[in-house]
Image (cartoon, helix red, strand yellow):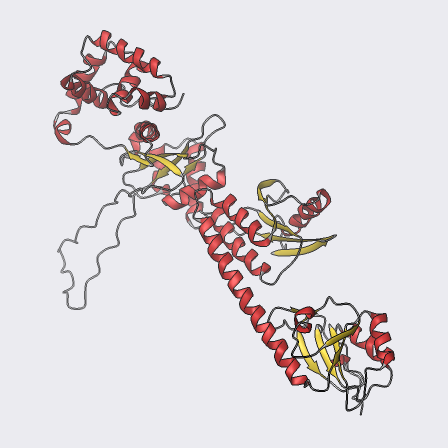
Length: 531
């Protein structure tokens, strides 16, 4: 008995519980004895449904393998047309007891409408087929979860590299076997990885990225499209920078969207690592500086009023860092104050504030409240941060410095970086003056240094300081100063002549080192920098 006609199913169908499985995998199960006798071999199964209605259309969601024995089959052509209209993936027809063989009219209709038709032998119950489909779906789901887990681990590892943004894009392109591009809102390429698609597909991908670029309100967070046999996808990154992750792949597999979502989260954090409440304070500080305020006046907006540390950094492989890579380094160091190297300079400079003051100590339950007039316990002052080595980077770090002396700290950080590169160490920290040298009044030490070093020109003093800091090594000094070793020998020889001193004497070296550390050349901005 036919059921009454029902309205058309909604356009948005529920999502399947597991990834679709190819029809070929089900046909490969020899124990089922299924045989395709009509229609194409390519189909993806999302569900299994059994129905003996003359028109099961109202009860189908799309993507089903519909199983039927043809109890109410009267018009095969209309029956198949309705199944195709409902989006059924395939039809399984069971022979016996109703039909001894699959009706020829049904075979012709399935060929005509392009619906795969399977012959189900009498010894194979429909429940066995359903169980096999669900098992295959569970296996597919397990494979998808394993793939997503491996991709998540690979992307997280890439995000921890010294060049995290290019590394994440490269890993994403590898995981999806396609092209991954980071674009600006105007369609300008920032980074890319993977094989380039056809120029027409690349242009379509750029157009798709503009759909999700957050330059106007109401833009979607993601969008997909196809261009020929290329699948395109675009995802807006968080952080308000207008960046878009665009993907072009030859095929679309289960889990691709999840893997792309993981990459979107990582790239959003890496591309805009310093978005937050303190961004407004940095903007205020910049505006005040442009309007004439002094650094001392705006410093409280940038961090605690304690000592600051200047860090100079270069990539260990000699490549020039871009703004995103430098920003990621600053984020890992704990600072948003990053200066990316200019065209003629590969150095990244980071200004690192001290740690914030500790909160007032809390009194325990058994502790008596503070009496009137009782002084509060002193709070810990801001403490300098400890800078660890960073893989892929060579760092030169100044000693913690008060705000008025940041220019000198910048010089010391440059010297420390040159020393680290010359000695091939990942990190060099410029130590403050301590020990016996700290016991001499600074004005007396500076006066003695000016007198002792008066014959030297600034380049000679710079070379002498660098040579002494590297224990008299000609080669390392040449590397640190980016000059030939013979140039170093000539300059050191000239220093010995002008000073009338034996530079092989340890006492002489000690006195000169003390003078260079406390004298007129200590605050220069050039010593041991790359020319």
